[in-house]
Length: 273
Picture 1 (tube, rainbow, N blue to C red):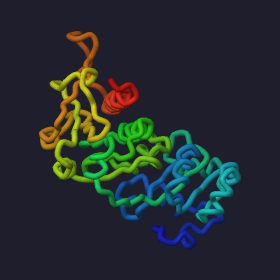
Picture 2 (picture 1 turned 90 degrees about the vertical axis):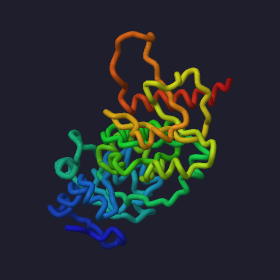
Picture 3 (picture 1 turned 180 degrees about the vertical axis):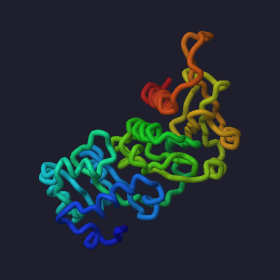
């Protein structure tokens, strides 16, 4: 069953958690259903409360305590809420350990001028990052390091996958996620806009002067940055292992590598040489 999410007054009449509601909420685990409805599922007070500050909620099913604590914003935003029991929560939750609220939010659709944003600020580009948990962690890292926009290739994991949403811990409320052709984005950038990427034959990141604008490209978990995107990278960076020459792991997890790279960019911003 499908509800019209364009009119909050008609979606999910409250009063009971019916089998149809349970079926619908659990169906949002599938990308096809999320895209068809234009909504996504979020769970837990930390994530949901952060999203309520910036995104449009169309429905929530929650324990009475959460409803009481959020009565003001529920009245102000006017979205319907079902008060449910812990047993009912376990039926709709996609988590191993269900938390106090499950909510449905509209997927934001914001048209941005990617070239203009990248030319004036530091942004991330994800080239075929496949793991939803990695993607969610990277979104959380971007929020921590003040990176407001992430540009994702069409083959990158869905940012609104429930596993991704959970891993962001609410950070997706503050970071813009944009799907686009990364080659087209890079080619549209103004001349001399730096495009950074990590490679095993790159320059040691700790000896490289890094700009506080441009694009940081992070690649696929197994294959790294694709050839078509890598050919447009202007600054190839290496995260060196220690000590040099020691036998070590083949590579770093993409979210860990992102943390190291973003941390060095911001360290240089805070301690200019």
